[in-house]
Length: 157
Image 1 (tube, rainbow, N blue to C red):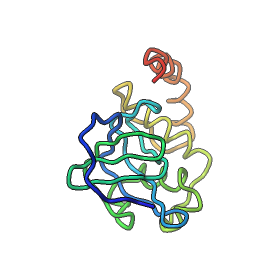
Image 2: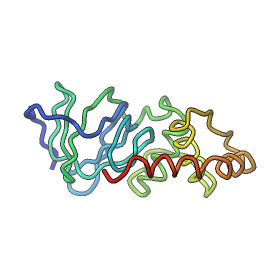
Image 3: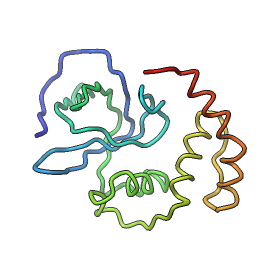
Image 4: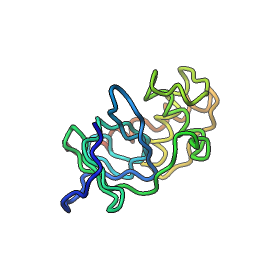
């Protein structure tokens, strides 16, 4: 159950901007948003959180069941996800599966790799490839080793 209340000021360990709430089982909610930083994922990509336990929109802070403390930026409504772009739509559909029924977009296996390429591109300061098979495979083949070497340098989080 989502608790909307002021939270004690604590240092966030992750940041979402933009973000939205996704209703799931029995009144619980997850965050879906773009992680500017996140200790487990490295940030710079779309993600889904564990269940939201506390949310203070006035201060832009929240806590999830995992204990993660989020700093929150701009909120968007799920109905407006198309305004966030194709990557946001595809990631929503892929990451949320059955809960993403309100977003009508077709996905295919190449979209999974394209999303990974978008994240790799941001971390390496590159433009992501076009959403075409040959471009996706070429980009991934050329850059995945560099990206994973960078991730290893981050160390355990």
